[in-house]
Image 1 (cartoon, rainbow over the protein chains, first blue to last red):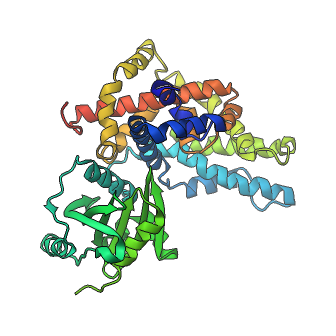
Image 2: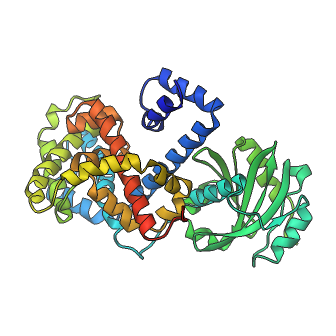
Image 3: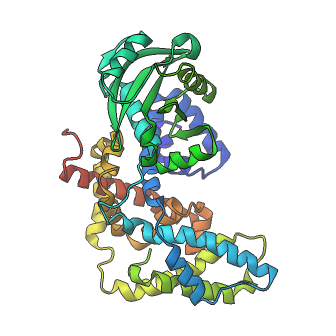
Length: 262
Length: 161
């Protein structure tokens, strides 16, 4: 298949529909065709962001309670009815999101739940592609640390290369939601990797990540094609992102936590 | 999916009661979500029929818009380059874009995006061929992007070309 034909099948590929042969052909093409790989990533990215927006939980508890009460579905007597009762609840949550999801956005100015993973993935893409400038360029982790100490109000550091395999190239600051953040850019195995550092006090701004970090010390996830690892280390919330294996990211994250803040 | 959002609870309640009434017809081991959503869909269709007389449905202008989507492809690239800038700031536009989709496209898009139903499940729920699901979903996505791009352009959320 040529590029046009491959791109015509993006919907199927994105939705994991179609047969295995088609997916294999597309995967093979994407491995060798950078423009198509980038095109697919962009398409999936906006779709994922849009979907995330639409899936933000709606306040549907009261409505659903009244639905069940009105339908006379209290405590089912037959075992088979439990299937209906429990599955209805799951269906209802989906339905309420579908019904209420789009309309709740009209209430601008109310609570927002920014996705830290989406925000950092966007910054990582812009930094690694050169679309965003890196304010301070240096291959020295101590110089990067000194620079960032003057730029942000919270403590921050740069993991040393011998521990992390992370070859630092520069640093800067950015806004993630309403929070100030520092970033350190570099490479692991010649692949761009970015480290985003925030004050740990900023965690409540990102409820999804906050919830995840309640149950796991290191939260690993994927945003588009990027792998991510996130943890609270001392007084920082640290997120490492790049197109390398999770093991590589974890090594960087652990190296960040090796030395206490001075 | 429901034009008059004030009737959400009523519509759900009615769908639940009908599904409950017909529960003996459900074949155990088959897809319960899809089975139940057929009742929801029928209920919504019935209610929307009454409400849609008051609201403009798909017009020739909307059909023309599909052509615009294709010619706008290069412009929409701008949106694809920096989607976060737009999506973080235009909740209202997303809602409006979804609402402006024709009924069936909106149902298919929401069942896929929010309900995470497969194409086959959506086809079962809406009682339409799976090929129609594929075609209308692709068209709905194009329309949404085009609408968001237009919104972003009008509100200067994107860099100038």
